[in-house]
Figure 1 (tube, helix red, strand yellow):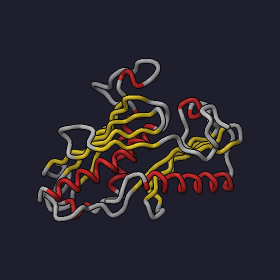
Figure 2 (cartoon, one colour):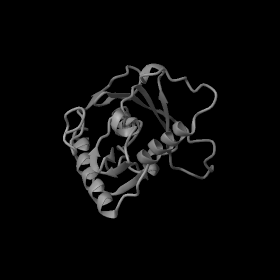
Figure 3 (spheres, one colour):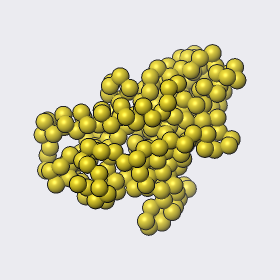
Figure 4 (cartoon, helix red, strand yellow):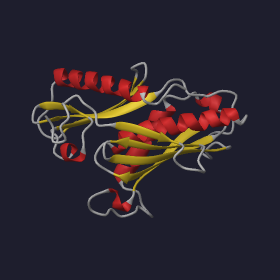
Length: 234
């Protein structure tokens, strides 16, 4: 039994409150236990400047930030230079969401996913990815309704979860106290059909076995299936 009373394979309560921000066509408050992230999706009718002129597909990018009072000790705003951690998470969110979208059908547009962590208790990047999918899907559906897109370009849903090993026990959906002392830390991103988008896994101490990884992957896939079921059909 874990500190918060969960079983090893049990997620925290996962909740998505859609249409959370008035001015964004896609927005959600994503909650994984005490981790809370506001995610918005907005679209510009132009492709990134670095894309070749002959390119007709679109792009999805992401910005991620921890708000100052989101952690137990106030964190500084990253005004002039992003930390390596922030840059890595932004790239992860962008990769994860591009993988589930037909960018040709998006056309010459740029979608930005803004993930702002208002309360952090572990798993902020996976909450940002899951919330990002919900916000992105709502953005596209609204664009279809308004005649800006012919169809929703999403291929299939995507979800993410953290998995780790602590004191020899495999745990799903790590809270901060677990994540900060874990022996193995992993984040797994999958599509609804089980295809792999990303696996981040690190042994903080002793190496872990292939058998342990197989169990971690199985539990992650099962958890992601449950998360995707909460998105609602689209």
